[in-house]
Picture 1 (tube, rainbow, N blue to C red):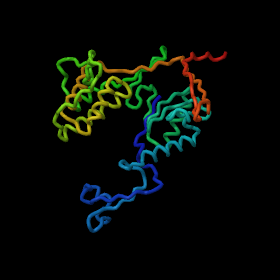
Picture 2: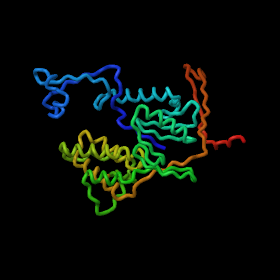
Picture 3: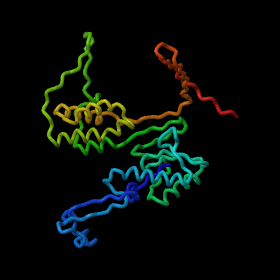
Picture 4: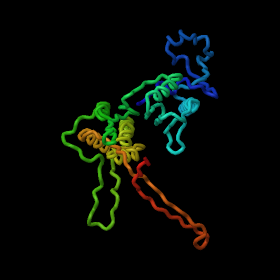
Length: 305
């Protein structure tokens, strides 16, 4: 199952208050009338506010909300793994979950244990519950328990992004997400390509490059690894993008538009990574040490009957 909390950052108690000053002229008239702000304004037309609970815009609100959530979970017997960050278990219940900000990906044995976690969260938060476990942190999960596989995808994400950017379908298929420097097979030394003398983009073009890079970065990291090199190239130029950078961004959009939507498969394996290592001290001159080890992939041993 999956659980999603709403308004996670809001109304978190703050141990140290913050203070805000803003102009009364920037406040809508209905808000001024509702809270009688004209009586509270200073002579120069400003309002001073004491912030006692979390709100958007405060840099510390994410950490405070996370610490509060962890404390509430700890009080009910849930604890975070010391080996895998974000993996939570219970002291005695057969339940565990991955916690990413305010999204829970839950694995349980027996619905009563899942209901226990739900009841704990409902005491403090507004939550949405998805018993089919098909959506998690923006990903669509397609489970194949028979083959012990799960397929990750983001259907419709590319089409929605292309509409946002006003990108039209290209006339021919694009098979490369970025411009590759062709190797010179007869040359003994491979030199990098010289920078192209291309005019800088205006503010609107600069924003376009930043949006393209930010829009598809999560897709690249989570599902489609083929676009990471293209995104890295765009990121390295987005401080001072040129017309050539814009051309590269459109090539990436053409690639995404003409290729099948990617999906990533995770498959359960019976292999276990084993590491044997050792070190010796003062085994060489000048007090030098030696270290060595072996990394082995071993089949998992069946549980004793």
